[in-house]
Length: 87
Image (cartoon, rainbow, N blue to C red):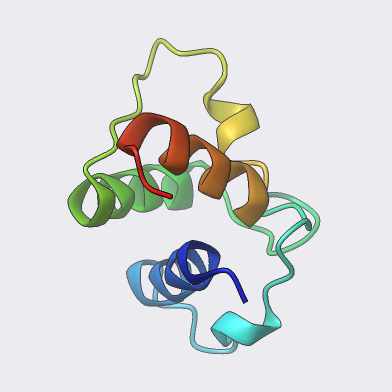
């Protein structure tokens, strides 16, 4: 398994205190919001802060692409790799 994606899944579960979900339950390509995990806008803010702390990657409130970046574990990993220089 991709180490970065595993770290993202663990971060989602711990930062959002998802008690009934384990990292291995999260499918890389499934949506994180609405259907899929069912996260909401508050979760997005908390997750954005956690990602900034862990990976040093920032999200701008004015960036219209944030919704795309937070679509799934796959899209978050791609954004973190691009912006954080992580391979």
